[in-house]
Length: 264
Image 1 (cartoon, rainbow, N blue to C red):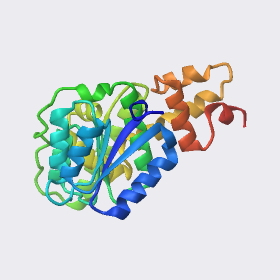
Image 2: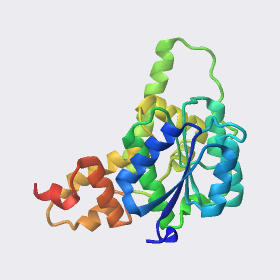
Image 3: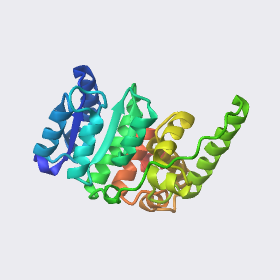
């Protein structure tokens, strides 16, 4: 395969060991489906992105000179469809808001699990093959968020969070078969993207994409019990338009393909 026939992924982090671990994880899962390019600061990241026309950018935030957020803003100005993923140790609401403004696909906190990283990269690689339709949505005003409520006791705040988490679970149970993103869910539930992103990670202990993927695969398992239903149709019923992508996600989560699962 030539460089242009595979998904071109940029990895930018000022820590060599971190770049090595991320590269090894990606290469171990995707093999020759991807071409990897590395940078150790934001300036190098922008240059590598331009030189190789990268379709996916995995960026640390804290880097010398131009940081990851500034690099992402420049990448987004030049390319509306690149899937941007932040992998950072900074759990700051302002950083999350800026990440959402550049329409980042996800915001993963270090140390991120291998499963979370692979799940979001799986989505990014698939989007690159589809022309990344989600990357072309216009910018929205992400500055709005729910107004701060007056100070409440911990029990009341906990009950409020439980109610919102249940609301999110019900929404996903109802809409998992649709082509939805974190931004779509936040908009439908009337929360700002940044608030929703932060709340989801704090209350579900995993990324939105990972949670949605696991939910879809659980639903697929139920449908596979009926051997008269075509596996390709099952993939579409649980939200995967591409059958090969469905098979790949299913195998990553369960360890077997849908057909193997059906007859085991």
